[in-house]
Image (cartoon, rainbow, N blue to C red; front, side, top):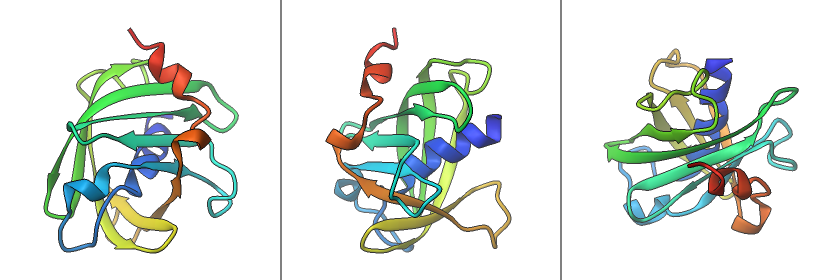
Length: 143
């Protein structure tokens, strides 16, 4: 369940990078989504802000709704995030840190992998809008 939550959060945030060589912080200010059908429907969303904070929310497929607030930093082609608030400390506790390594940026999606994935593993996240982000109320409800 913990790795699944990482997947949703990182997928939601993974559409927030520039190219595989470097990141432009302005490219990160956006909304992205996690999807099992190439972005047609989304079960998790991530949003990054220009102030170095981000959030993620959604519903784990066949599981509970979740919400997180985080801080992030960019190093090379990696985006590392640290949880600062969480709706489920058992799955994603405050202080948990995870990194996404960006591989490629397409017109509607980004490919990435987690730093602890095998080098051949490829994950996808898709572009979304703030109005698509149905779960923002979960983020807003965090203490």
